[in-house]
Image 1 (cartoon, rainbow, N blue to C red):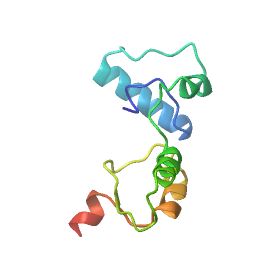
Image 2: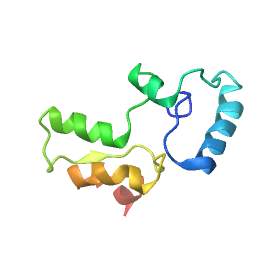
Image 3: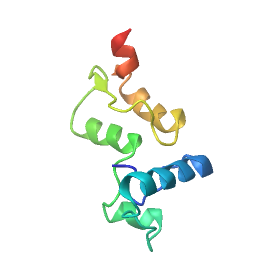
Length: 101
């Protein structure tokens, strides 16, 4: 979903270049640069939720810190700093690597 949207995920120039390349190769240019800013896209609901937003939503829905989360992707856009808030709210987080060890 991240690559399909025209949203920025806070990972800096390297991430923007990687997403642009992926969007061009996989989506063959169907994801165009938006005329809206990232903030406008987010306020319109056109961006996937960030890890912070997921954590706040789950907490608001009543899930507590004993809830085990499974991270579907091995790479989070924005890096470890973006997922730190989610890990603080839900420390029992698994991904493919931790499940196979």
